[in-house]
Length: 246
Image (cartoon, rainbow, N blue to C red):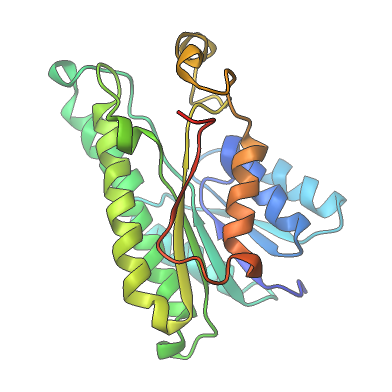
């Protein structure tokens, strides 16, 4: 059993999510590695954590589907260590497109995963962790993006819109549940080297990053781990930007 409890990480099979899972496991948490379709990737993360002496379990589920979310949290709650945290990492770009060319189905799916999924998962975490409902408290970290502030013009306005919603949700929920032993914060990454950012896009945009390089998933994972940790015990409703100054 993990001495620190279980943290559910949505979208944990690759990219930022996988790095976050490994980093939190290194801090002694048991990790519920959620995935929607990439079972092989999730199992690889579980094996990596086990090989390092940690505990993890892969849990399938589409965060945009309420029934899946309920099953995910039931599975996480059944792990030996109690649920103490949620990282709302699952998200999609929804394709690069100017608004005039945006497909309605792509918009709906982007909002369903990035916004509805985050809200549903946070709801279930609060139901289980809130001291007002018999829980022992915990922490929630949502993944936002600097796109919420920059707007994503000419390619990602719809994605930026979804992340703007995450910023508002983070601030509101943080103030709603702070007295119930739950700290809610967000991390807003900038240009990070993952498969969600094609190399050509990174090369095109990196000159606009003051630090003059792209970020790595492990650098975002460090920020998430700090917000989850007791070291951030007085940090509530904060959106921590990890963007190299962009």
